[in-house]
Length: 278
Image (cartoon, rainbow, N blue to C red; front, side, top):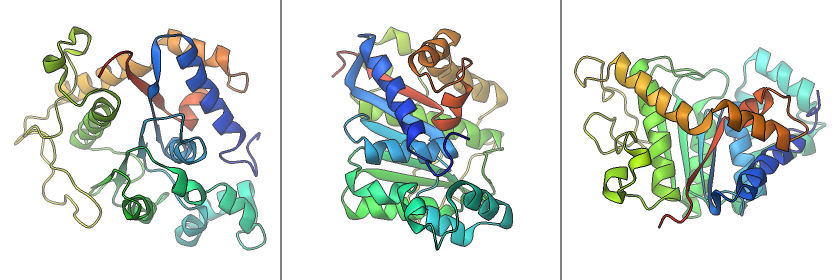
């Protein structure tokens, strides 16, 4: 594997190449590019924000690792085996673990960061999001951490999937655009933009130390049905997963396979505010 002993190294170069390609098209404002990823993509999101802080204006990470050494300490046997296979022994190869940890570069992160995390994640425990949130908060960086009760490494409840997608798009709208709803901007291309997080159909905000257990809406009492969830998924798909977009990214990054799958594994999608928006 190309990234053995190089997690967040060569694959980060791929991510930055994709970002540079988008900017080179002339349709993307280089000051308003965001990055998002889930699992390893969440880790890559944090690596990008820390190692290339000028490249991205905002980030959203779902269930990403912040500190490889504390991850190893709390990992199950399978995850420990994977870490050893990729980075070596955590004692003898401490430098490799540090180099692969976003925690080593967190002092460079200046962009707003949203973390979405399953409360019962057995692969990336919630302490990773807590450690990230506390570190950013101590430096005065804009950060928010949301913990979904009963969820693991993937969000399985339809209301949580919907909420996570809405929060993700709203975060980028807020920090890459001008923070106003699409209707107020007169932006017809975004007339189906997901509702603002303050909408009463959305779970109220939650940061570390203030979980949302017992406050999550159910499909019945908050009218968050399958149709709305499907629409939320379609809105994000429309933004970031056009076949042409994947082909363009693959053409721009030689290390990626031609389907673009490696790109999605490393950082699920990037989204930019419209060029020229306030």
